[in-house]
Length: 60
Image (cartoon, rainbow, N blue to C red; front, top):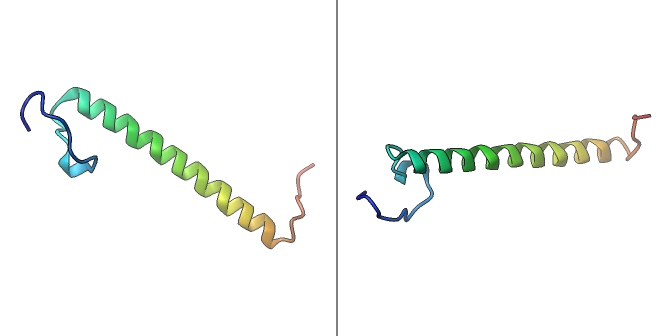
């Protein structure tokens, strides 16, 4: 990849990780997407688990 050339693919193996601005931007992007994905997965599993118990919450 030449200096000033745009990124054509967001896949990790296609990114120019030697350029600090790309490494920071896509590193933070992938961390944020992972946190959102883990949170959504937790909520989906928690909702499924609660509905399996008959929808009764055990919280006070």
